[in-house]
Image 1 (cartoon, rainbow, N blue to C red):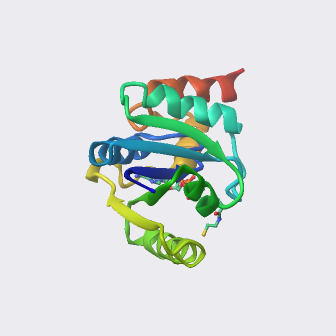
Image 2: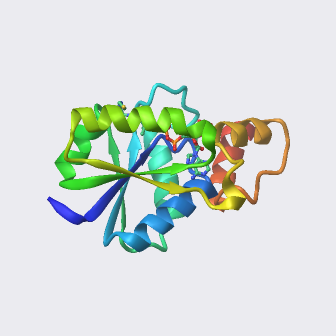
Length: 161
Ligand code: COA
């Protein structure tokens, strides 16, 4: 069991400045943070697992205590394998609460020793979502200040190549 370790899971399709804000703040609290990119999360993904993990890796390159891993299957099984006791999730608005709360209850039913900790999303990022960014980009809107530069480049590769 590693008290200094936390896991921040998500589909990250793609990673946004909102995710990055949560990852940075969690990395300030814990000695080591694993950003866990889900291979399947029930969503229709634009980017492959490897592409999503690579974009996360490039976005957190300046954070030496952050490691990027991919996982399939149950999140709680993956977290147990790492030895972590904490799952980090960001909360943007009240609308996130119901989904996040039920997910945390199911996870603690499956693995009572693992706690979910919620970090409130910083004010400027509360309106961001990965699907909204993809839609606005596809329709020609400017999303440059809501995603890391490597993600902007990757979106251009997906939609303009
Ligand atoms: N700022 C801005 N936006 C944020 C944000 C933040 N801090 N945190 C999340 N978001 C947005 C994302 O952009 C994303 O938007 P989208 O819905 O438009 O794509 C959405 O909120 C949530 O996505 P993400 O944070 O990438 O995570 P997720 O909800 O897709 O991840 C898993 C879910 C992977 C954690 C969950 O499905 C899982 O654990 N899967 C493994 C299987 C399992 O164990 N299932 C049982 C779970 S009870």
